[in-house]
Amino acid sequence: MKKTILTTVMLAAALFGAQAQKIKGSDTMLPLSQKEAESFMKSNPSQSVTVTGGGSGVGISALLEGTTDLAQSSRKIKFDEKQKLQEGGKTAKEVIAAYDALAVVIHPDNKVNNLTREQLEGIFIGKIKNWKEVGGDDLKIIPYSRETSSGTYEFFKESVLKNKNYVNGIMSLPATGAIIQSISQTKGAIGYVGLAYLNKSVKAVQVSYDKGKTFVEPSIVNAKNKTYPIVRPLFYYYEVKSEKKVKPFLDYVLSDEGQKIVSAIGFITLK
Image (cartoon, rainbow, N blue to C red; front, top):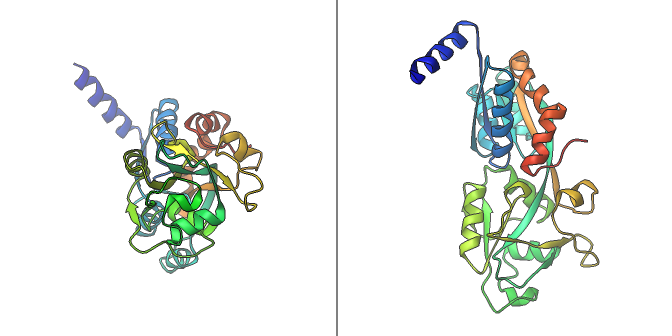
């Protein structure tokens, strides 16, 4: 009986012109887009939204190929990506949905609590190889990174490494959840994740961008008052011709209700 009712509802939605749209890309934005879509569809039963991850680069590639309506991205669209869109007769529009603080995480048993930007750079480019070099135990450092298609990978490289290359052979993982899991199981590990992914299985370190004068913990409060330095915008990109289709969802995300979800998930609201 339940199955029959569900089928009837789906058929009715199809008959009355239900709008189906796809969102793809940033793994960081995945929990946000999923929750926004779920809430949006409750308020708009004729709308259907599916959300998948894969990384910011994957989302923008899907936009280029016309296989997604919205690309979710934790970095700005690149110049060459814009060019490819233009060559295909497309123009991308950008919407900032929220902000995100990037937390540097280590194993909970690691006694290190503070790291400067310079120390983080040294660790991730391979100059600093042992925790004793930064006040920890005599233990090999095992850095973890996101894959190159990830906007988080790009942003960390730009903000923390000042565009220097990651160490050769760094452990690259396809999803933020995998980084959390690996670090929780590896005592010498270090990695970086969006604030919304923080949990008790890892420890977030306090970071200094003024050569060790002040160390600040990653939190929504510190990101909002601009004392925590590793903060970035989170974007949606869409093709201009799809504006009418995607606008109801984007308007919802930017509304008071949508921004409450931003805050509940662990991101930073626009206001």
